[in-house]
Length: 67
Image 1: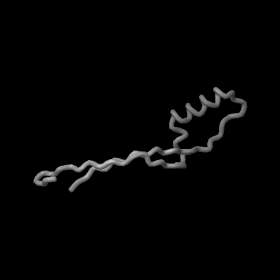
Image 2 (image 1 turned 135 degrees about the vertical axis):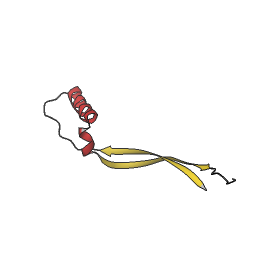
Image 3 (image 1 turned 90 degrees about the vertical axis):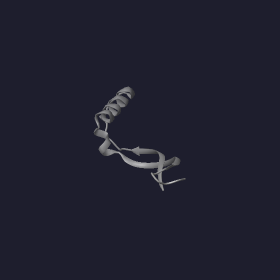
Image 4 (image 1 turned 135 degrees about the horizontal axis):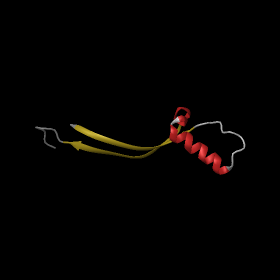
């Protein structure tokens, strides 16, 4: 019997990054978004927490097999 199992998790990652001094709150937000969008921050990201959300299974009928 073949079963397809789907697990849904919420993964929370944290990164400790350096931000230039003197930026306004909106400047800090933009700096973080720019680093994330460029992919630069990904190398600093560490998985901090994984929350289980759901699991499901679907039985797949194979040729010549009855359920």
